[in-house]
Length: 377
Image (tube, rainbow, N blue to C red):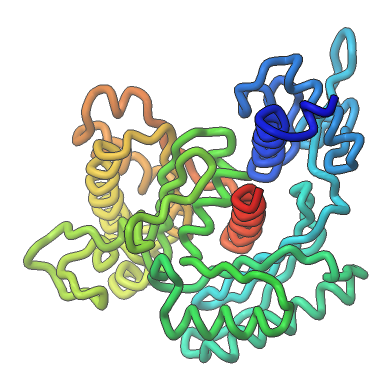
């Protein structure tokens, strides 16, 4: 007994515990079979670790429910899902979008306890956007009777690129103001990249090892999620698909490039040419959407040949055009990808709604908090 309480055996057990906690924190509720697959632990080892964590009240068990919360019916012993103890803390996600401020609150068991949004203008200052978000947090906690004393952290999505060290005037303003209000770690990232992370945890790419996300809205951005973690790249700009050049002689882009994809397929550009672009009711609108789909497919093909993801998730308002967008997109993707790539990749619409980036902020808090805890051990 004494030998296990210290030294290599104790370190090994703590490592196994961290695997279990990490899987549940990043994936949410899992059955024992799913947990074994995620952690690569033997059945006997996993059983021992789970019992220890249950006794510590770090985990709870829900019998007769699958990880999505639906009742399981079948023969034999009821299936149960393991989850982190909901009393273990809260995470707050904020999306400071171009036209909308979204706030979502979750506990560590991936249960969303409150969510709300307010509109804002594109010209709204960043200081005012942050204040709107903080006011919304107050409204939600008051109306839902939520105490933030167990708040683990805040994840905030902002428009535009965010450097890996978050040292930009906009990001610093957001981080310092929110941190001063709540006194907890604040993580700031691009809101489209956070939406990508949310889709990988709760949406169309849940349970997938590698996912490429593209959002087609008034701006065009993306994100890459590998193994449940958002891939940032050397400068924190991985996944900026909207700023891949599709025409070297095209119009200048605010990013400093020329002929970027965003300059051709953003809603801002398309609506300037046709107001009813989302309905695609006339031939001009359909032609514009078809051309946008082709250009997007070509850019995605280059990205997929490089990354070879299991799934490509497309979000944003432009997806409302349906097959007018997706058919030319998928045709171009097939035409320009390696055979082994287009045989395995799956293209799908995003599953989450307008709170996707706020949920991604929550996912960022949960994964970062566990990583930091593990590094201290």
